[in-house]
Length: 332
Image (cartoon, rainbow, N blue to C red; front, side, top):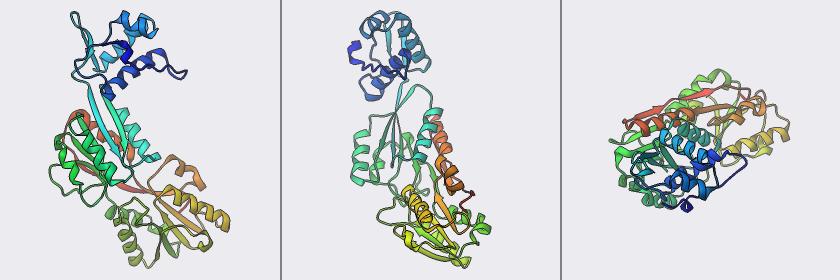
């Protein structure tokens, strides 16, 4: 192989060693380099890249430790047959999905490269990306587009190489999954915070069936809790700051709706956590500090990433529903 096929992007933020190793890792991830492909000799890569022989040797040794490349006296350096490519398809990019991805990469052995894509709840994009990926990767980690059933296009993937994350039907046999529960678990979390919630007169659930990409089962759980505990319940498609009054508890799903509720409190002069309560779905670092802390109902996305990496690395079957918990902070 010619070193000219390697795209080497030097940056002030990375060392020459990192630049070179990342160039080879990217070539494997993109398919430019495949198992068995030869790499330039140390002298050739040093000459064409402009990096010292010492840097090239260190890069090759590091990649050998990661099992990405191998070497033999007669053949030189080449891409290892152990190199693995992972197809990871998430629903959207958000701070808690970033936590999941970072944890996934942190716990994944270095011999794996990951192609990360997003379907943004677009059915056509979801189908197209999976169809294009079938047969091109060693493992597949996919966030299903629905919580009620697995999309038929997923059946094109070898189930032994497939892991479904976050949303999916746990009753489907033969599929590996790491899911969260959106109804019973929510009800249990609300019961756990009942002493704080009873300080409010009504719960306002901000949820649009058309605009909010979240399973509808959560609304049923909230309705049941409110009915059993004599708490008023209303569902609104969006936040109306002019209607916010003391004694209300707002339950929001999206980050944007949380921002609107906080803005409404500021406009109305309502004190968060006393006059008006807030519960948000999915924890993020920002919610730990905003408005003296936002109470959340959330699964542990770092744990989801860690377990997903374990599945990819060990090829052991997994069928697990992660716990969802209530984290009480100043907003409740």
